Length: 146
Image (cartoon, rainbow, N blue to C red; front, side, top):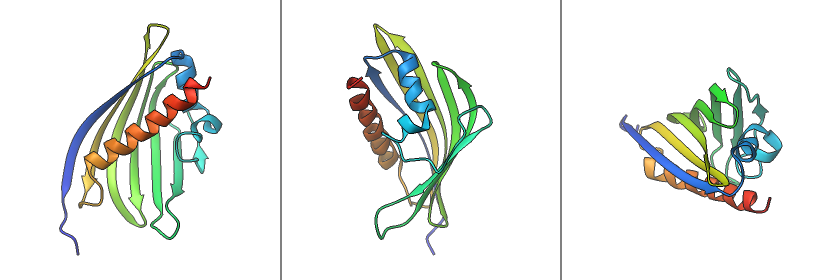
């Protein structure tokens, strides 16, 4: 059995998009648009008190389960949610995330802040931050095509 451990970490990722906060927010709020840059949700209830759940993983690899709860949604300004990430039957992390949408010039500055607890060495803050940057870069590419 692996030794139990917890690693606490906060990271912030900022991106600037050339479109309005309302447009960037739409790519978080609409499940059809969100699945273009994030894992397709099996359940998607985008409202305060709602949640989002998805499962997937590499062929032949473990199944990862993302299970989020929305605690506050301020349209075009802020999303606050918590989520767990499981690998198979093993909980690998618990996180609190804030996504802020700030007008900047004619576009939007997105500020993504995640406070995570990474469990038993199954995931690391560096891996999570890297994956988040890749997702937000994909969103940049999509929005630049708008």
